[in-house]
Image (cartoon, rainbow over all chains, first blue to last red; front, side, top):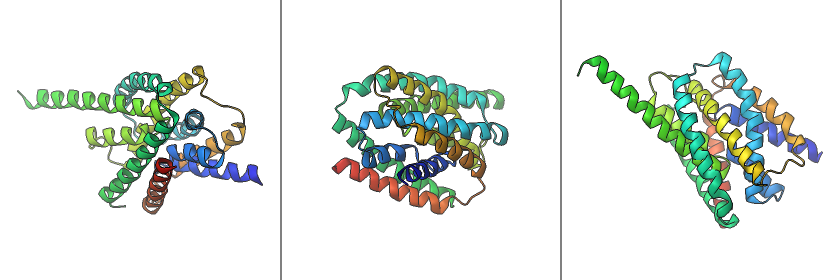
Length: 122
Length: 132
């Protein structure tokens, strides 16, 4: 029963993420709250989860959506530099502080998501 | 300056803007293991609104950006000993199935109510994490 519950939660979060509604950070929250996994390890597992989830979603998107290769290339190249800096900084940030920053990031994402909704008029 | 060169210059600025957006998205994603996607969506929607008319195209491009960036971040977490794979097997299959379902239904469902619910959930979770 517990395994089924975990799988359903993962399915829901992954589907939300693949639909562009959001969800990336929710898996970290789930691991942190319900599994008791420390913040940094939860973040690592969330990244692995995203690779499976987004990897599957991208397979669909490549066939069905309009992709802008140059835009993707520019953003990815710069993003790799950003990721190297971000991951280099992570071990030096206290776990509690990291959790609070993560919490603040979630609040900001939630507010931005609501604003996006009102702009799109959906 | 002709119309063509003006458009060219605007295009260059758009790519510079996207690069800054990608840099920030990568940094946040590396530092917090999440959150880069929403920054990528905002950068794309600001720089390429004409080319990406459909919100579903926007999200698809953002996912394509975040996938390699997350792969690198994940690798760096693993090297630093911050990637726990024990027990992950339970989540792997639902992650793939959910990703496929999300990809198929993106743009087909009215996501407005879902996004509102998600936003409320995320804000609650964020506040809970901050005061914990």
